[in-house]
Structure formats: C-alpha cells, structure tokens
Image 1: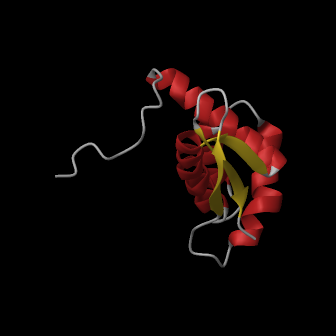
Image 2 (image 1 turned 90 degrees about the horizontal axis):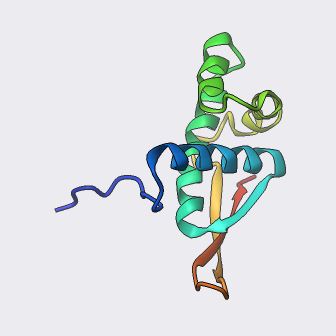
Length: 119
C-alpha cells in the first residue's frame, strides 16, 4: 500500500516548512539555481513547477493574484517570474527544473543537490 507518500515533512512544523519553501523558491527565482539538501530541493521543485505553470498562462490579473498568494512578500520576484522565466516555457508541457545530486555534506552526510532551470 502506498499510504502517505505525499510531501516530505522535513522535520519542521507546517508554518515553518511553508515559509522555508517560499524563501528558497524566491532565492531560486532570483539567482537561477539553489544548492540545498535533496529532500528540500524536491519540495521546492514541486512548488516552483506549479508557479511556473500558473505564470505561463499569461500575465493577467488572476494569474498574478494566484502567484502573489504563494509569494506574498517579494513583488520583484513575481515580476521576474512573469516577464523573464515563464515566457521561456510556454511551449513546454512541464519539467521546468532539474535536480542534480552533488554528493554528501561532510558535517552530517546529508545528500546535497543543485536545483536549476531546464533551458
């Protein structure tokens, strides 16, 4: 049985997890890549893929409102998502990002991965 195979808990309370994923998504949109643990990268990837799918529908009021609800405290990041990133993926049905494993971290042997855009 495959019960509870949904999102990873990341050992955080729900509000902290939500804010951490939002902050990492903002950093990813601003910089173009993100280096973090593999589990966090996969969760940020799920979040980002949904945002890009909403943004590539068009720069109308409802799409912008839906993205602003997910990224409420960075207006310039939302503008970058709509103006620079989403137009690149209009013809692509999905899979806008990739997770590249980078080995283990020395301090606690956590698996490190790099999240980046697929061009």
